[in-house]
Length: 414
Ligand code: HGY
Ligand code: MN
Ligand code: MN
Image 1: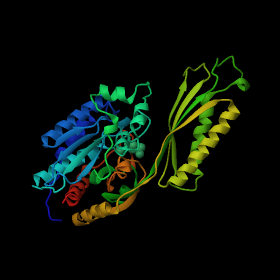
Image 2 (image 1 turned 120 degrees about the horizontal axis):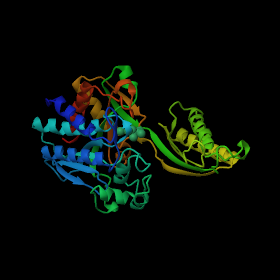
Image 3 (image 1 turned 90 degrees about the horizontal axis):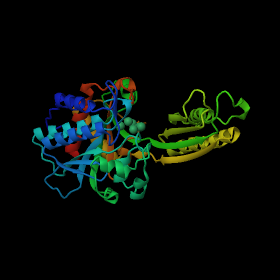
Image 4 (image 1 turned 90 degrees about the vertical axis):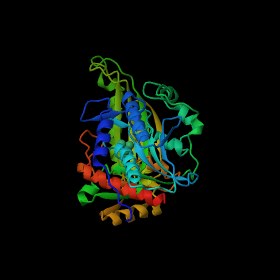
C-alpha cells in the first residue's frame, strides 16, 4: 500500500455527534425524516463541511447532494462514495451517517496526504433512503438510476397527503424531476461504507465485510375497511372488525416468510394503524405496511403471493374489504467483482481481515449498482443491532472502514 493516510478519529466523531444532534426525538434515539427540520439542519451542516474541504457542491431537484473534488482529468466519469443521513423514528446514529461522514473523511485524508486523483472524486448524500415519509425506500437513488420516473415522483404523497413536489419545494429544492436521472456511465464506480446492521462480522471477530450482493426488498401497503360500531351494542357475530382481520394477516405474513423454504426470507408488518382508535369503538379501518425480503427474488415473490392469497381469504371470511398496493418489489443487486476485488486488495494491503458477504439490509448501492460498478464496505455494529436507539459502531472499526474506503477510492480513481 503506497500511500500513508491518517484518518482523523476526532473529525469523524465530531461529525457524527453534530449530525446526531439534528434529531426530532431526544437522545439516545435519533429521528430524522426527509425534508423535516432536523434533516435540513443536518444537510446544512454537511454542506458547510464539504465547503470547508473545498468541494464543488450541486443539489438536484430532490435534494440529492453531490460534492465533487475535480480530478486531473475532470472529463472522465468520476468515482463516487456516500450514503444517507435520514433516520427512521427512534433509531440509531450510525445507519447511513457512517457512510457520509466516512466519505467526507476519506476525501479529507486523501487531500491531507497530497493525493491527486486522475478521476474526480464525488461525495453523494442521497435523499430519503428510508421509506418513512413516502413509503418507499431509496427514493433519491431510485430516481438517479431512473427506477422512479418523473410521473411516479409526482404521484408520491406523505401520510398527511402532502406531495413530494410540495415538500421538496418547502425544503428549498427546485428543478424538474426529469433532470434527476443520471446516465449509465456517469460514474466509473461507486463504493458505500455502512454498518452491517447484522451480527455476522461481530460474531466472526472481523473488522471489515466486503459486500458482493444486496438483498431484494419489497413493500406492500394494505388498507382494510370493516364496519366499526359501538363496542357494547354490536354482538360478536355481527362484527366486521378491521383490526382482527389485520391481526390475522400479520400472522399470515410471518407464516409466509417461514414457509418459503429459504432461511433468508424475512417479513415484517412494521406499520399497523387502526381507526378510530377508541376503546369502546370496534376498529372500522386498519392500515398495514409490510416489508418482505430475501437475498433472492424468487422466494421473496413466493412470500408476496402467499400474503396476497391469505389477505383475500381472511378478508372474505371476515367481510372486510381490502386494498393491497405493492409499493416496490426490487431485484437483488450483484456488486461489481472488480470493485469487490479492489476493496479486498486494499484490506489485504492494510492487513485487515475481511469477509465477502451479502447485505440483508437494502442501501442506496442497490440502485447505484444499476448506474455503475458498485460495491460496499461493511463494519461491525454491536450485537448486530440497528434501527434502534442502542445502535453502536466502535470508533476503531469506523476508522478502519474509512481507511479502507480512502485507499479504495484512491485506487479506483487513479
Ligand atoms: O431497511 C433497510 O434495509 C435500510 O436500513 N433502510
Ligand atoms: Mn436504515
Ligand atoms: Mn442505511
